[in-house]
Length: 239
Image 1 (cartoon, rainbow, N blue to C red):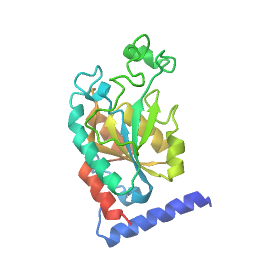
Image 2 (image 1 turned 60 degrees about the vertical axis):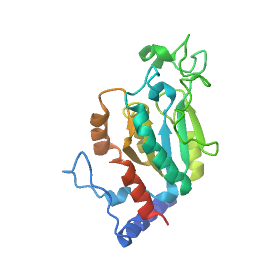
Image 3 (image 1 turned 90 degrees about the vertical axis):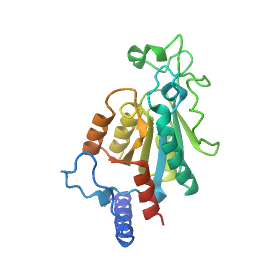
């Protein structure tokens, strides 16, 4: 049997035993309580988890941004709460920014859907106001920063190489937009066998589909937890 598979299975069993000893029960499913799923198989391992904050840039967060989610600033305190916990417990914090070349040569067909992203304006060119992280975020130089040219953070970036080098197997997803960049990255990650959690109150979108997406996400790809639930699980299962 593959040694990596065996090692991962053993780690899951240790987590389950730790949860049992400490009296921790993972929160039930929010959207599909009718499904009988062993959620202890999907516990977050604090020693192999990273926090992803995706596209919380001025373009998508600030009310002046041309692609801003209406409640973008409202999720920032919860993101910062997760960042604070992760920083205090040596859990990697990864800031992802959609970043395009000034000439638009890395955007391709996406510009047909979002002309604002393509030339001649190239709204998310590096260094522009729109590209910058929302200033209220607790981002620090020692954190990890990823640039991606399209929706999925793994595409055209070194994200996967970084996660592998850190030994990460579990990912916490926050940011904008729930059903676009955050969601497609999460789906891709699940297909790479990362154990994913979407944080319901630390992600938002400018579409009308947040709740519908999270409903499907819980059914098919990940657990959906609130900020305090994520922190409670990490705290309960820390070594």
